[in-house]
Structures are given as C-alpha cells and as structure tokens.
Image (cartoon, rainbow, N blue to C red; front, side):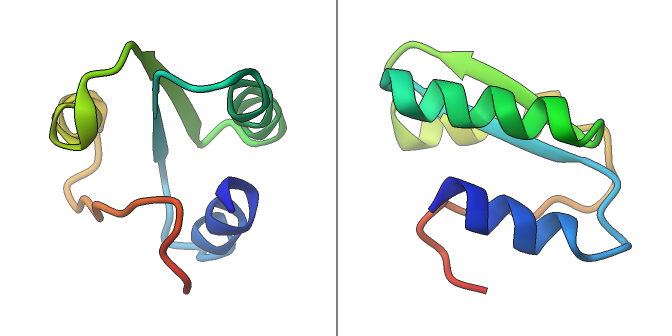
Length: 78
C-alpha cells in the first residue's frame, strides 16, 4: 500500500515534499521506501526504531519543511 499511497500523493502537482517515516520497517517496506526516494526527489525517507504511531508522526512533522502538512497512514485510500 505504500507505493499506491505515495503515487497518489505525488501525482498532485501541489505536492512539494512527501516525508515517509518507516517505524521499525521490515526489509520489504525499507526496500520499497528507498525505491520511492530514488525515483522522486520530493520523497524524504526517515527510518525510526519502533517509536509508535504518534512518535512516527512527530518525527515526520519535525522533518517536514512545507507550510501545509497532511498526516496519514499508508493504508489511507485516496
């Protein structure tokens, strides 16, 4: 779901940055995150070790540079 979520967000021309926080990812999620970051310079990939949903959101908010921030999990359907 990470790829389809990211593609939907990046398809919007108003998207200037997509911060993806991987919270204790398995190898597959980590690989998919790196592929997305390599394909699009707007993707910022951050990996944390099991800080929980709110910890991951906090990391993402602090890493973001845009004025508008959308918080979502990768299982959100656009």
